Length: 343
Image 1 (spheres, rainbow, N blue to C red):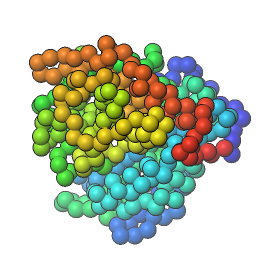
Image 2: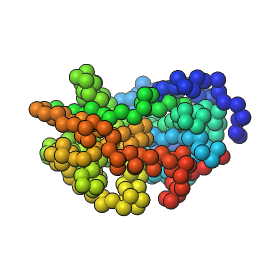
Image 3: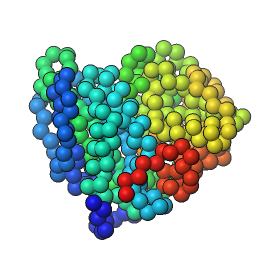
């Protein structure tokens, strides 16, 4: 269903924000039941009971993905099966019926194809894809909702940083924890992000881009920022906090590790990383669907500020970023079979 003409959108002015598209996907399920066949409906508001489980008890999860126009003149997704699997494990953690992987990917394909004329021209951005699964049935008392909604909406978005990639200025916070041990930090649960809003607000108020969170059980170790995983490079060794239950298993995180290990032949260590190791690192970067791979140029603790690589993107960070974007855009070979073409 490829449409020849793109929407009349000023693609050069596109920001990383909501631009309503044509349609969205929706499906429903009763507790302990099977998901019904989903359908496309016009993009717009939805009706919810004021007693909906997602509104009262935060019973909801989400994913973040992108569709691109590639160098091969087609629309592609990047590793959608990883998002499908993570959505399933996140749903299980908060007692939401799992959406089968095949249904998840098929729904993504349907909604992207129906909004294909909203995919920005190559080099102008991407179509951001937001699958959500909510407890939408009414419930009074802390318990799983009686019914659920699986919804996917999309929005064309521009680059996360319009003026080009900048080195982030981050502050380590001792006031707040992102996630507790054995909690929901390792899952894409909506409440994790609500909890990060106030620390982020305080960080930005004092001139920082984001807050770095520490391990809740031992504040000597780095965890991640509110919406991205963190990496440090020292003596050509790539290090990142291990997935111990409170670290989100990011798709971009996993991709960066594979690129470093398989293509750059680097030593990779997933472990608990002390604050001092990040402050002494040759390079630091964060990863995520929105930021892709973004360098960190400065880290501030309660009593000192440390520049990383003289506040410039390091050569290894740049190489990982270039390889990842090259694969996503089909500008280079995909040795991992990560690309999922739609057209």
